[in-house]
Image (tube, rainbow, N blue to C red; front, side, top):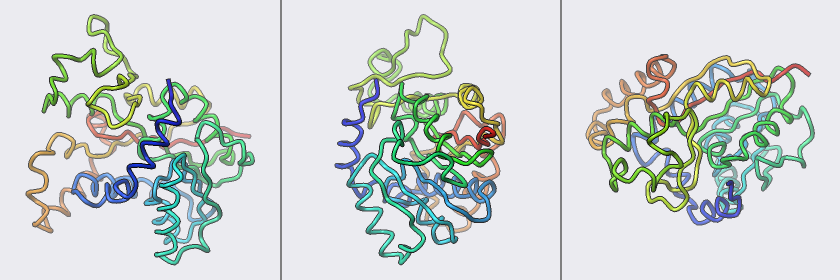
Length: 282
C-alpha cells in the first residue's frame, strides 16, 4: 500500500542530499545527463511544463534556464523549500509559475489541460505503489491533449541485475524478505518491494519496460519511446569513480549512455525506465 506520510517524512529528512544525488557521483551525473538528453528530444520548443514529483528542482531549474515556464509539485515541503532556494540562487523566479505541495495521486487543485508537457521523473511514480493508476490519470488530466508525457520508474530487471551482482545483505538467499514475490511462481512484470527491507531506501514498485508500455497504453497514451538510464553504469558501481579524473573517459561514458539508452536489448538493464508518451486526444 502507498504510504504518503511515510514518503513525505522520508524526503523531508533526506533534504539536500536529493539535490546532491545527481552531481556527487558519476552514476548520478549519467542519470541526469541521459534524462536531459531525452527531454531535449521530446519537449516542445517552449511552453508551460509541469514537473511533478520535482524534489529540489534539478530538472525544473534546467528547463527554466532554457526559457520554459515551469510549475513544480512535490509531496515534501522540505524539498520544495530547497527548490525555491535554488530557483532564487539561479535568478529564475520569473520562469516559475507555481510551487505547490501536492501528492501526484491528487492534483485536484490543478485545472484540466493546463500544461504543454508533463514530467514525472526519478522515482515518484514508483513510490506511489498501488496508487500508480490514480497518479497517471491525474498527470494525463492536467496535460493538454496530444502533448508529451514523460515519466520514469525504477527498473525491475535492472535493479535485480545490480543487486544480484553484489548480493548485498543476502538478497537472493532471503528474497522473500525484500520483495513481494514467491520464487516458486513465474517472475512478474511489476513487483513491489517489501516494506521494512534493508535493500530499499523507501517502499516502491519496480517495472519492466513491457509492463510500462502496457500501463500507459491502457490509459490511452501513445508510446513514442521507452529509454533507460545507467545501462552501462548500473553494473559497474564499484569501479566507476576511477574514471572521473579522466575527462575524456567521462565524456565518452556519458555519450555512450545516451546512445545506448534506447537500445532494445538494454532497456531493462538500467536503473530507471523513462517512457515518452503522447497524451490522449481531448
